Image 1 (cartoon, rainbow, N blue to C red):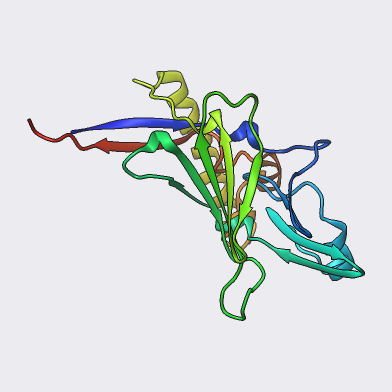
Image 2 (image 1 turned 90 degrees about the vertical axis):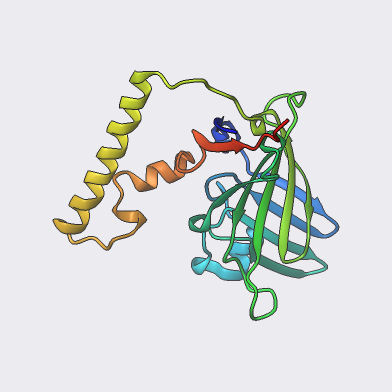
Length: 217
């Protein structure tokens, strides 16, 4: 067997202003979501319920019916985890999970797991079509951007550019912590807010070195 380098770039799926967030309706529930970033807007039900204490989130579950209003956070953008839908068949697509949402039963926090299914025939970026589950939400999304590319090599210029960018962010992080007295965390990364708003962090240039096991014979 040998290692095969696979590449994905889901940054086109990230919503930016003045666009609207992705929305899926299910019975009396509404789900507002974004990818690789918090939603652009906070649903009115959440502002009504929490007022100035409302938190930003990559997804909201809301209910508005017969005078009843409810809002739940589906996850926290800082808990992002990437994975393959099928470790043995990476061409099937990717999954993106956010955890630490509003508690469901006093113990388990809500979570949202995007299932980006590779479908090269879907025009544009596609849209989330189904939200399944009541605490651990599975969001089904068919898109051509979930199909990996198989680059044979990386141009030297690209390698140097990525290296220089990582050095800049690492150096700025260390400077902010040691010299500016900032707490060691995401906020100490230079331009953190801008990067998060653009959905760049953890969404563009996803790569896996996947070892294909070949049966002898």
